[in-house]
Length: 294
Image (cartoon, rainbow, N blue to C red; front, side):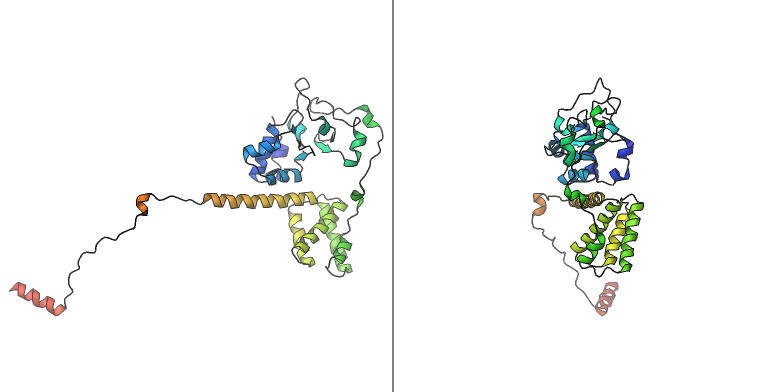
């Protein structure tokens, strides 16, 4: 199996704990020719990976997990370009049909509402020089069913006013608008930026703080880390949690303990103290010395 340096040398990948990186490599090594793994739990037990490691890979979208428990490596086709005569089609055909290939040759999941429409029409063909061949039917227009929940428009202005942060004065309206623009500069869409502001206010509420200056401190931290979506923020939180747990475990394991032998457990007895010479005064000492000289 091959690995693309573009993926495994990226900051997004290297920011993860070593245990999460190791799990990603092992999943790749055990994947079939289409990047699917049907034994991810066994691999995790084999290398001692935790559920947080898998959740972090899912949150950062390095892998996708299906309802069946099967996992697929998102950038599998970037890592591996398998010759057509050597490629063996995956046995996970149902999961395979829930994916589509995008321009950079990585996998993306089809929206839930349009998977049923897409079955038999948008299917990934066999691998040929690392590229997918789509059926001609893919060119036909399709009806896409969009979940009503996905049409929810984020409104940080309303969230600010209805959650106890105070009156939404023109000053704070401008502040919120400027933060939306700042996150758009690091790659967020308009809606993603609004969701990020709402997320920051939610974090502030969870910490029982309803002050805009506190919300801004959270936003500054995310902006410095270039976290441009809520998913990236959640992944960063998981990464920090996993790192803290790893550090605690290391400190716990690094404490050296030794078992004393039986002979060392016996009660210690102090050696007997030698009799000290009796103390005499200076006059007695001189008198004895004079007698000795005589």
